[in-house]
Image: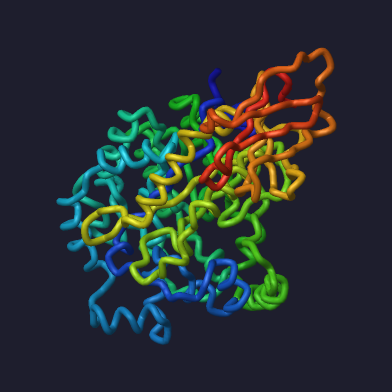
Length: 490
């Protein structure tokens, strides 16, 4: 169908099956900020927001916000910059980043992502510093030559798609420090800094349209907010859907409104800061903003939902506390394979996807080994258990427990139910009672199995599942019991 620039028409756009089936994607934060690769070690983004609210944007663990942090002479980032680079301006990182591209192998990246079991890849094409990873023909009026000479976007798109993966683009529409260089300390200052000029509105709209023409992205992943008024955004969405019918837009497209205009008032902003500071104290996750009038899916950051959501969603997070590479982040900040698998399975059971970030180095355009290793381990787990993940849908009950107390998450296909046990049992057998609302009426006794463990013996008596694990439990962080022909997706 063709789409027109109205909410009524846009809301007819369905979440494409490929995305609902995919479950796992790779995010890539890579740019000039990858050269200094520094952010203070203050914990997770949740901890910094709760404990350092007054300096949240300065002490963020996100290295991709380095350019803003060094504008404060008293910040850890500014101190690091003085010791390492003297008075060198941020723009001078263009040369070492450009030099590193001689080592870049997009095919090697694509091979790794495919080995990890990812089904799609989203590249940051322009982050908050405004630097573009393609030679945009839309000139930046404030920063000459603020693009790469090589078209990194198209090169990676070709490599990724040649491996059968989908390709999306991230664009920072709400923040661009080449248009608004004012230093930012608090969350409200950050949200108030969306460039408010016709020049930027035209620039952002034209650049995103250029990306659509360039690579026909399967996902348009905007960040923070969008600078144009709604009618112009609806026109962009309609043109995108008409060009890429199976494309998606995420939920970070809030257009200028009374709240964003109110935040530009320093007095009102200070009042909101005092209220927000008290509210976030003790919080363990970043609050998810309300959805815009139209989006295909939601994107909670470094957190996930505790219950199954009707609307499709995607957890977005790094392997550690930063998205972009942080050369000083300790190894114990990286997700363990068990943490990664358990959180991922929980997301899938509750109608979520995972967009897991890698942060390539700025000196050689290589993905750090500890991140590559984790992706390979994750891919090995998915090769054994992928049938319980890909192309599944939430079951009417997402959670359960074995009789020993191990958590269980359920996923379903039209002719299968999967009970994914999180953890390793302490003995060589497992007892599990299937959900009460699972209808077995008229079903014969059918063989069940443990994915990737052919020697396991699975017996079903009514709704009770008994699993024998000869030789001990599987040496993996989670394993899936496949129960054929008795499950119906709700």
